[in-house]
Image 1 (cartoon, one colour):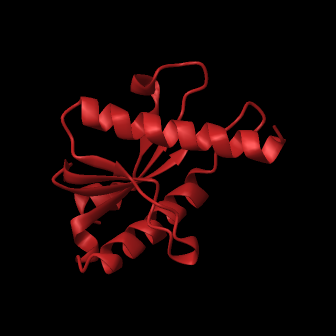
Image 2: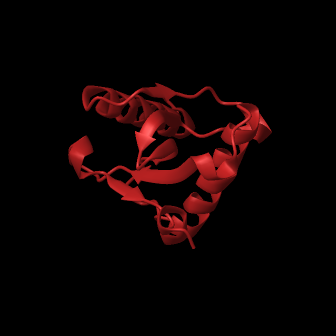
Image 3: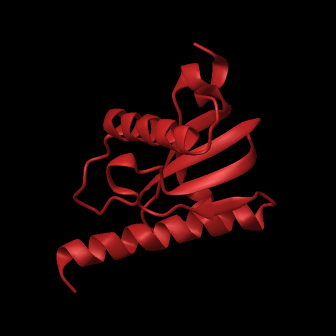
Length: 122
């Protein structure tokens, strides 16, 4: 397996793990299809994600990869906008989030990253 393929496989596995985690905890979650330039995120939690719909960008960085909170949250924001537009929702009905895998730990130990203003109205 090439490095690129192994990175894609690790990411796809993590996306499925996140979807399953939400489902196992009583949420209506789905893994989203890739849609190119209008990508809508990796996982959607369709109800009661902090009172909204949640669009999640999943990241499973390898040992040598830097964590890019600013870039990843910007990506999540863009994808939440695409998700809302594709479904005729208002953008403020959809929360963008990033879930980052904690290396060597369970899904419960993953990090949920959101912009403060998105959650508390800034």
